[in-house]
Length: 93
Image (cartoon, rainbow, N blue to C red; front, side, top):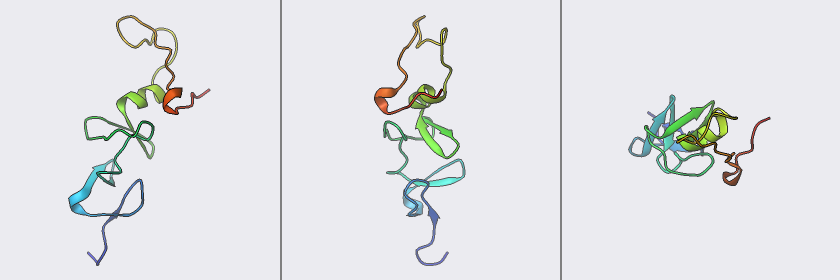
């Protein structure tokens, strides 16, 4: 590997060295860049959800891309009216 070589981070496009590398969907990320695109929570292999080239925590992914409408409540038979606008998620038409 040439001097300064290594994979580029999926977020900041800087070189990712082995000691700080997190891999997801064939891409490399810095540990400090491996954050939810919406709420900025740190992610790991059990909490990440990928959509195209974007990474989300499972909660934000569900709010943005999950089922919508009557019958898809937030659990215990309730209907959640939270569309994620407080987190900066714009509902898709």
